[in-house]
Length: 446
Image (cartoon, rainbow, N blue to C red; front, side, top):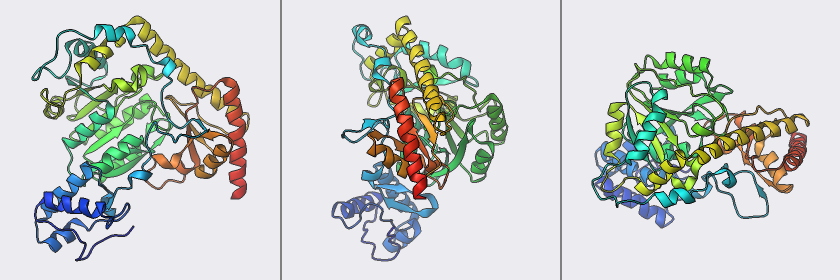
């Protein structure tokens, strides 16, 4: 990385807006290119003769707009947007796509009837952000899993919720704990927000106790974690692990804990929270995208009163509310018996297909623990990139574990995430044979 640290960086300006505009101009002209480092805040402030906070503000603007990403103590660099992995995206080619992580369209409830009932009177500026019908249903759904009294709001999906929640407690370079490996969107959110990501390892029972303790010792002000069907590993938190994590958090009641329970109604595992009634800052986020469709783009957020109030300030009924039509469609589907039965069948199907694929792999000496979620997390005992290439030569597109990593970890780089739920049993068996061959080739290469 080419880091510009001395006088003559080419950046100009006296205000944060001018400095941000100068950096954008340098990027547009190709003077600064993806991967190039920006000067440290203090160095640039001295160079320009401005207050340090002015540069902090400029870098914050650039981070929020995706021009730069923060690497914590390693500095700030121009974002390489072309190389950032995207969830659900695959290049158009002849490979069978097992990398997208998408739900099965055939298992998403048909919204036709819900669309017919989503009308009614127009919603005008200044009306409540959350639609009354969805609010009543959501309160009954969230209450058993909330640690105490809570405020409820609605966002445009879980990623939007996490971004807004972090923005109301963090400033640039603040530390936030993320699971490692981690959901791609969480990595993007933290990087573009200019926050410092602190990795917490994940094992078969979820976020590890020692990992969380180490992150808290580094001064994290927020934690983003997944209680079940962790993406990409499929791990779900056990009751014993949840209790241990709760004891660690007992000494840190003002750290914001965001539980991203994105798989909720599809999960085959129980929900075990890590915050109790004594914890002061918490949020439980439940997206509806995985079971009633990504295009609905609705998530529900239950949180403590202060967090709910701050979140409400970022969801204006005049400009930034979630469409009430989408909320009504979601409510109609969630209260329809046939749709709920479809969701239950989908959850059981995903779990069964992961288990079946693990059994096929075991026949060829590849041992994978069946997890919850939309994909299988497969240890290959060889560099994942090499195994990925071997599978591509055989017609399969998969994701290497490296894409979900933001900290050095050899274990992650020896795993693949494979979305297998749409495969027939014969196709899954064929994939297992091809994967075993690709693994053997990679190991032979050393």
